[in-house]
Image 1 (cartoon, rainbow, N blue to C red):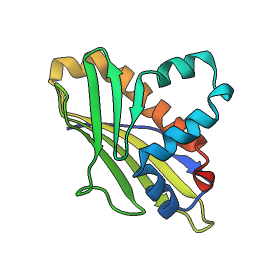
Image 2 (image 1 turned 45 degrees about the vertical axis):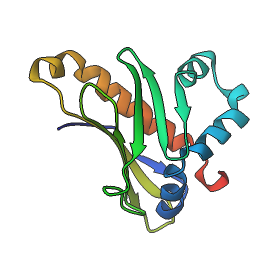
Image 3 (image 1 turned 90 degrees about the horizontal axis):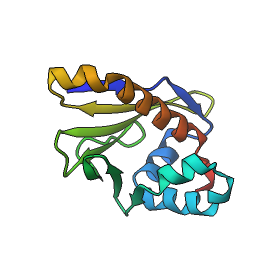
Length: 147
């Protein structure tokens, strides 16, 4: 699998709390709905393409709807949250790596893992790196301690 990682971001919350919130996407949905008026029009438009379930996230894409389900087997409490696509033309994992810091904060890195044919990789590599970075930035903005 090819891996596309975001730049690391510091989150002002402990890794265990972040893990518990990321493993329940419905909490993120509630937070987004409560603060939707603070988002710009482009962000709101992108959110219209996302549905949050109890342990899954469904995203409308040019390939159709892709559902990412929490991968309990590969997630590690306080260290890594993994979502795996259950219906996708190519295998996809969405991973959040968490690294606890001594001061109670957490360094996070978002990662997209895909199994792509070589010729496709070159065509979409830039978009995937940008997507991983946007995902990482979005995670850093979530007030996990208030969810």
